[in-house]
Image (tube, rainbow, N blue to C red; front, top):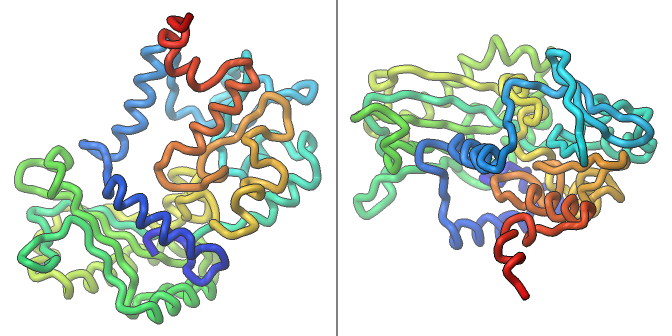
Length: 335
């Protein structure tokens, strides 16, 4: 379940091997100071090269003239011209609305219309006065803890999710205390604690019901965790922040339907079909418009592969290459 995909969907068996290989090769790593440090470091590279990085500038429209992407318009009405290309990470479900369906082939729009989300996530972040203890055997304390009673229980969770029922009987959980290995995450002696489970995005009565239910669901999940740890209780909770699938989508529209990997890794949404049949090359149907991010091959997680692949295609179209962009001095020195 750590792949954030339904185990009973065709083609998802490969994800277990992919996850295992990745963990064996590079463990489970995050930057010191939190995941935000990675985009900040990437932004610094752009700025050091003379570029500009803007945040809180939501792109509302990709400007198209003569069948070519020529720039973007942001929510505040600002316009930015694209001299060579527009590179999008807008979720593929939103892309037709942002560029205008009239600029896209019917087959592309129809393919995107069939796009399916992956499993929706429910997350609670805690600030604790001490670290929760989860035994890992041989006296060790674990930074990450997963609670899964059985495969049958996971199947029951997936069935409930598809029917719109919140599964709280024996919820599947992933709990992480990152501050145990990275003291920069919290003040001295205190800890951060993140709890993840999986729930339906759509509920009877609509997804907006999450606003009324999320506190109750979070409390039930916390009670379940307290039975697994000898010291975890409300006594050590300093603060908490709950995010339902709806909250995650509101905060970042790329988390469409509360799923964080762009979309299900189903056979009809992988490889040649990601993000749409015939458009897996990172080039979109509009000239000078390129697509990257979790909705493109090889999909979600923090691998850098979609961006690397898209950059290679774009640079090739511009008569350059990744080697030339990354190592211009080395290439210039060649005889």
